[in-house]
Length: 200
Image (cartoon, rainbow, N blue to C red; front, side, top):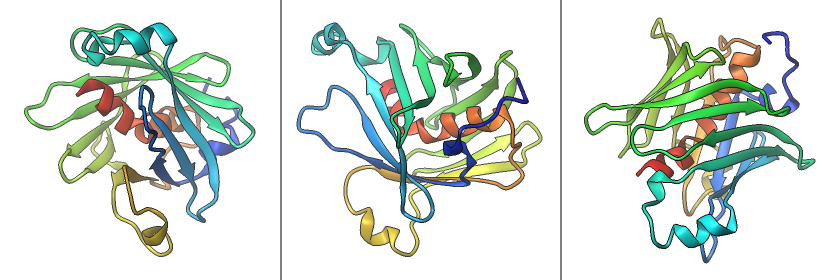
């Protein structure tokens, strides 16, 4: 699986995530830009009609969810899936063919979110840990080497482009493995806001 060719979407090292705000928000939706300010895709939450109704009655934290990462050609390049849950979330990351390539497992840590990014066999590839209030996270491997970061720090033209709602930046280190692991790490990192929202 390590030889699987990565879709073009995952060739970036800098992702800018911009939430699309709707009047009635039953589902989350985000635009994804590269470091040059070009839109390279979208992240969309798929919510069945029945679930939209049930969310008015039940705690949304227990609901399953699907997040599709699509490129500019509307092709799904990866997806995030969680089943019904009543405690810490365990989430699957699938490639464009629906094959499980990794996962995200929420861990309990007092007052601070901590997520493990897993490989297809459930082994820990990396951790996302940091400060929820400051929205400042590090992505580190099992040897504590930094693989990336998730922040709300902007530079250049992006200061003017991103002015409202939830926006954040995911930076992937050059040392991050250029194989299927990068798909798991990027997919996990760029959807972290939605995973946290659904878990709150």
